Structure formats: structure tokens, C-alpha cells
Image 1 (cartoon, rainbow, N blue to C red):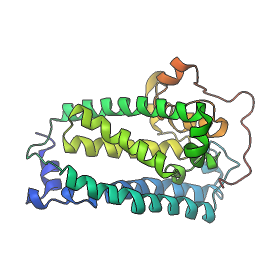
Image 2 (cartoon, rainbow, N blue to C red):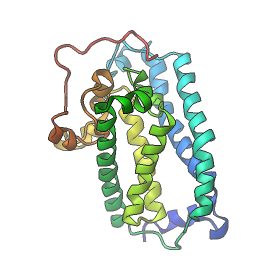
Image 3 (spheres, rainbow, N blue to C red):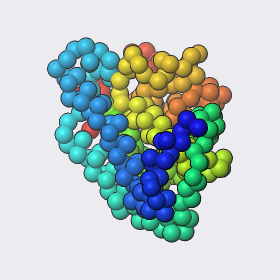
Length: 266
């Protein structure tokens, strides 16, 4: 089994003492991945103000970040994780202890289930997102925080209230649970989901971006989601484009010239 050495390394010598069983693990895993995936884009943000080539890949070339906005995004992310998510993961670990099977899943099964999980999460998020834009009370009360920034950057990915953060976390956890996925499959899905979320908000249309690897415009990518933050009335699905096509909410370019921002993301 191709994945068995990887799984053996993750669970360690003693399955009962594995780090995967720690209530700290989900928080450190998600937060560590999020900051690690965001760091290269933050570096691009810092360099693009001096390097015209990098700036040419920015979706909103006239926007820029500053340290105040970086601090604001990081502070809210850490606050949500430490004050809300960590206590909930502790409770969850006692109510539903992690089961770590000795055998890894077959690679084809892992890949297929990760893809299905991504499709399920995309649908759940689309419906949730559409409702929060169509019902003014939901938007004002919960989702408006995330739309503080009309120009996206990697660290705006998790700039959201706790209701939105927990809701999307529940969707992400529900998809592999519904499919009865192996813990390694869950980790693979969570890793991919965090990366795609950060890439969606990165603010760059890079030559190696995921949407360039998926044919026929089936995957929206950063350009797709940046238009949502800019215009707010389109492109509600986080990743794929089929639900927005069916709902008539898909936009690939703004009408007329893309508006300029005020020069910062804050």
C-alpha cells in the first residue's frame, strides 16, 4: 500500500499516544497550514510594491497591504482559534475520541473521496454563501465582517466572525464524516481545502494557479473569488463554477473596466 509508510509515520510507535489524538492537533494543524500557505503570498505582497513584474499578476494592481491590516487579520484569526475553536475541539475529543485504524487507505480511494468531499463542501458553501447575501439580516449580522476588504489578500481568507468560521468548519468536517473517510483522507482533504481557500483570496492570478490546470472554466480560482469581493453579487461558490452557472450568478469579468480600490485592503 503506497500510503502505509506515510500513515505509520503519522500515528507513530504507539497508536494510543499518537499526536493525532491530542485535542491540540486540529487547531495547530489548521492554523499552521493556514499561516504556512499564506506566508508566500504575504511575501509577494511585500515585494510587488517594488517589483513591476509581480504587480502585473495582481488582480487589483492598485491595491496594497499595510502592517495594520496584517495585524488585524492575524489578530482575528488567532482570537477565533484560541477562544472558540480550541475549547470546542477539546470537548469534541472527549465526546468522540479519534479512531486510528492501523492500515492506510488505498490511494485511489483517498483521491476519489477527497474529490467528492471537495464537491460537497463547494455545494454546502455555495448555498450558505448565497443565503447570507440574499437575506440582509444574515449578511449584516454574520457575513459582513468578511467583506470588510474589497481587495483580497491571503490573510483575508479567515478574516471572518466566529459564526462564519465555525459554519465553514462544520461543512468541512461533515463531508468526510458523511463518506466515512479514513483519518488520512480527512487530513488530505483539510490540507487541500485550506490551500484552495488561501489561493482563492491571494489576490494574484499566477501562471501556475489551480484554475489554469482545470479545463473548460470549471474551476474559478482567485480571479473568480476576487470579483465576488469586488462586486458582492456574483460568484458565490468557493471553488467550482457550475453552481453559479446554474443559478445565473457567474461572472467572469466585471461589466466595463474593473474599478480601482482606494489603494489598501483596509
